Amino acid sequence: MTDGLRIPTALPAAAETYAAAGIKVFRVRRSKAPYANCPRCDRQSSLYTKHRPEDCQCGIPTCHGFHAATTDIDLVRRWWREEPDANIGAPCKLNGWAVIDIDPRNGGRESLQALEKRVGVLPGTTMQITGGDGLHIVYRSPGVDLPGLLGPGIDFKHNGYILLAPSLHASGGRYQWAGSGDYLAPTTDWPLFLLPRKKARPAPTVKHRFPVQERRQQRPGGGRMWTTADLVQHVMDSRDGNRNNAFFFAACRAHELAEQNLLSLSEAEAGLLSAASAVGLTDSEARASFDSAATRPGDRGWVA
Image (cartoon, rainbow, N blue to C red; front, side, top):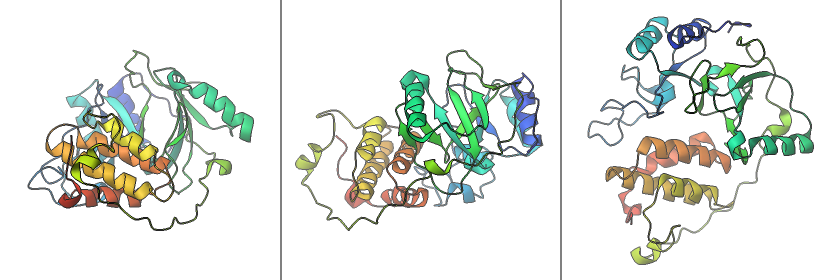
């Protein structure tokens, strides 16, 4: 990647500029709705072939969301020729980044002040002002999984992606790199004091088997149908020793509801994987559990 990269104001030209500098990018709809996977990559298709998104060999360049990111100039040019107003997404881990995402609408500034009061001022590095008046603080990836949530309004973006300037926020504001507006490749390592602490391996827990009626009473919201937000919160509320069970339970519900077209499986997967990271599960553990939930009909006895 090149230091001091001047970013054009037009989205198609900006996307090509990033790709030419070695930054992997992909298209993001203004609505953020994901592009449909091909039948071999769609978990709900009878033609689905189990595989990890990063190992996909289907050849369809829009499958698996940010895993489709590329530096192929011709492909990038084709994407933005088809959709010149598409925003520019960049996967964090695949580009060697770890990002602190500050959302002022949800208390991010206050949480950042509290964090710096506790551990000291964060090291200076590349920063991007988001279209929603938030902030991306971009460090070099530490090479280990990071929790997804630090506090109200502060997320760690590592396994996911961020939008790049000059993408357009729903509020109408444009993303822009801080300072001169040029992109500067981050040279500062992820702060050591923000690395996750190793936790003792929890003792095995007994998985209780509730009758259908009793299990219905265990979910949040009483008589409400499970939503993606409910499932994510179920994982976030889990404690040491029960995190794996809570995640697997939520993954089973997600697959079951998706089969009935009651929620988007891709959105549920993204939310649950982020929640899993926040409570201390590794990305590989969570993905394996989520995939396993798709093949365990015996654990998926209800949705209502």
